[in-house]
Structures are given as C-alpha cells and as structure tokens.
Length: 146
Image: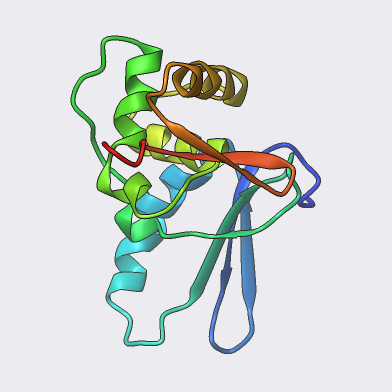
C-alpha cells in the first residue's frame, strides 16, 4: 500500500535504517497493542514513529505516549470530542482532526473524520474550542481561558 491509500498508518524507522509501515483502519490500536511496550523497553534512542492518514498524504510525528487512554463517559459525540480537546494531551499543542480521531479511537470511541470536523466547527462557533489555520487544514485546542 502507498501513503495515498485512505487507511490510517504508522511508520517505524529503526536505528539501523530499516522501516516498517502498517496500514490499517486500526493502526493506532495495533501500535498500542503490539509495539508500544516493546519500544518502552528499548534503550535510548528509541525508534522513530510517525503516523498519518493516507487521505492527507502527510506525516506527523506522533506523541503516542501522551495520547489519552480514557475520558469521562461522554453524553454524545460532541461531548466526546470536547472531552478529548480538553485533555492534557490536546492542551499541550493544537491538534488536527486526524490527531483527535486517533485520540478518540484510543479512548474507545469511533467517529468518522467528517463528523469530527463538523463537531469541531460547531464547538468553535460556540466558543468552546479555539481554531487556527495550519496549512490547508485547521488545528484545534481548548480556549485560552479554559
């Protein structure tokens, strides 16, 4: 598969230059289940891990160790997105809808990217999240005062 495919993916580059790519709808879950503990046991420097979505055709460095693993039970989809945006992980830097989708999946909630983008737009209009242009997309975080 190439990065042009629409599946989420992650790439691991080892110190010796070998690279492994995993393309799967459950890429983040596979990483968490099969690779995260192995990497934690390795001496520094650890392998580099990048994640992305083939739709966007770009790489993003993953801060997977800080991804939220749970959120307080949401009352619905909008509440789930809001709660992920308000986690310490999302407060550390503005996050793309793809990153927020990965975090939601990591917490056990499956929402498609279109729904997440629509929810983020609505939350922005209500002043519940801040938004900033980053290239061709927007990135989101909690409002400054939150």
